Image (cartoon, rainbow, N blue to C red; front, side, top):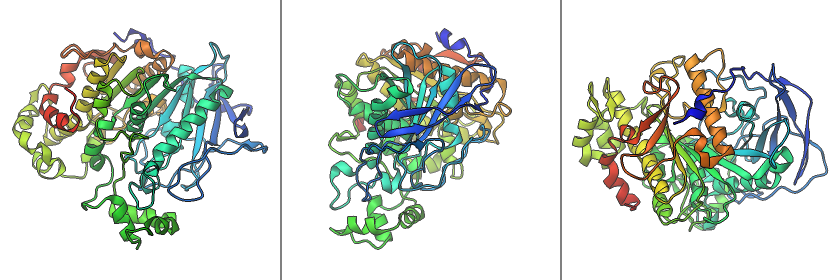
Length: 540
C-alpha cells in the first residue's frame, strides 16, 4: 500500500527566481502575470494573481456577478484585497517569505490566483486543483504565504487555483428581514462563481476543465463538501474532491469550537443589528447596508459572533444537517473523494481554556455528559487504551474533542461514501513539527498539514522527516488530482467494519513517512459518539 507515494519527489529546494512575464486572454480581458524558474531545472511556474472573477455587488448582501469584458490590458502580479476579516488571520511559523505583500482587506475582494507550470501541455491539458481556505466561515484569505501555490504546481505538474470569498457577516449573514433565502450564503455563492470562472477560463492557462479537483481545509473542506452534496449526481462539473479536517456534518457542533463563540440565544445577525442600532424589522437590511464595513466588523468582533452557512432549500446547503443521509440516498456528486484528519486537531482550540473533563462535560459539550463514564475509561489520564496513550489531562481532552468533532465524523462519512460505491480514500496526518514552540511541537494539530501540502515551509527551518512528509503529501495530492480513481497511492476504503485501511502520514507508526493503519486503531472510540451522530443524521 502507498508504494507510489513512497517514491519521493526530488529534494530540490523550490526557491523561485523571476523570469519573463507571460500574458493570458480570458473571458474578462487580457492579463499580464509573472513567471519564475526553479533553480537547477527548466521548470517554470506562471503566476497570475488578483484576477477578478466577479464584480463587487453595488449593494452589500447581494450575490456576486460575472465581471464584464475589458479592452484594457491589466497587470496580474499582486494579490487582490482579502475580504473583510473577523479577527486576524493566524500566521504559520517557519514559512517561506511571500514574494508579494497582500493589500488591505476590502469589500472589493473577489479575486482568483492561478499557478501554472510552463512546460508542454499533454492530453488536452493539465489537471486543476481549486483551493478553498478555512477560517470557521469568519475569516480567511488566499493571499498569504502558506497558500502560495507555486511549489505544489511545480512539484506535481498541476495547475493550482486559489480565490477569495466573503466570510463572517459579509458572506454568511443568515436570515435578515427582506433578504431572499437564496442570498443568505453569499460566501458559498462566491465560491460557485469562482468555480464557474475557472471552469470557463482554465484552458487558457493550459488546464483541462474536465480534470478539476476541489480541495479545502476546515471550513474550506466543509465548503467543498457542500458543493459536493448539492451537485446533481449526473455529469458533475468536477471530478474529485479532497476534504482536509472538515465535513458538512461537523458544522453545527464545531462552529463554536473552531471560531468565535457567543453566549446569546439570538441569531448572530440579530445581535449585530442591535449592536449597530438597527431595528429588527423591514428596515434592518437597509440599515445594515448603510453602516461602514469597519462598524460591522468591529461590532462582530466585540460580540465574538459565530457565522455559518444557513440551509437554503438545497441551493447551496441541504435542507437539514443530513449530509450523510444525502450520500446514503445516492444524491450529490458521485466522484472520488479523499478525506482525512489530523491526529490532534483540537489542541489549537483548547489552548487558553480549561482543558479538563469537568469543563468539557459541563460547558463545552454538555451532550457528552451522559457518556462521561465511557469517555473517561476510553481516554485514561496517564494510561493507554484503544484511543491512545495520554500523559496528562490535556492530551486526553484534546483526543476526546478531536475524535468527537473530526475523526469520527470523517470515519462515518468515509463509510457512507464507500457504502454507495463512491471511490473513497482516507488519511490521517500524524507528523509533529519539532521546530514549533511547546506544546505545538508535540501534536499534529488543526491546520498543521497546510504548509506541508503546499510545500511552503522554509527549507532552513524543517527537519528531514517533516520535509519528507511534505514531499509525500504533495505527490499524493497531485497524483490524486491527475488520476482520482487510483487514489493517489492510498488504498480504497471499504464500508465493511474492521476492514477499512487508512494511510497514516508521519508519526511513530510510520517511520518511513507513511504507513497503512487499520481503521479500528484510529476509530477505536467512535462507538461512544454513535448515538449522538445517529440522532443528528440518521443513516445506519
